[in-house]
Length: 169
Image (tube, rainbow, N blue to C red; front, side, top):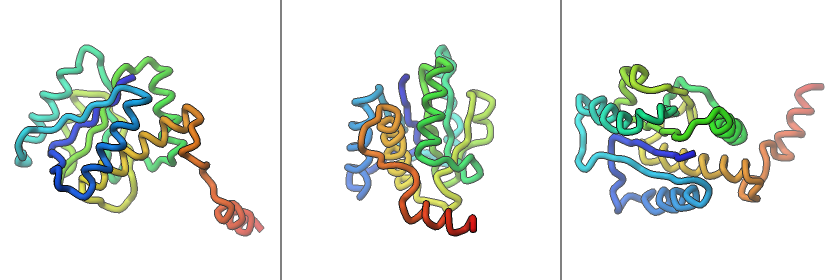
């Protein structure tokens, strides 16, 4: 399975998150092929749909799945994301597109050109570069969970487990 991250903006090399994002793209590439697609110049809101349409159509033969970030999407744990990625692989998905919007989110018309699963990183809003940084780290973490790599240490901390027991009493 291939992972393709599509953003309607380019990460400036002087961004505080540039090296972090590149590091996690590199780490993901040790598990599965990964690619980041972005425009060569800044897009205005009216150009975003055309950009996504053009880029997604390049993969139309493979009928890819698009995981789109949206504040109203499903909140997943790291293990939940890993489970979803594993299920996509079992179902035979060859390409998973990760679509991140810019300041105005993702165009509604996206749903008419690709299969979409909506996920949310949080109910909070993040700067788009930070959202990409969190997403690439979580995708790497998911790959580590699936390969039993020690990067991920589990879902519930001892504190969370003890508080859970306390609440049940």
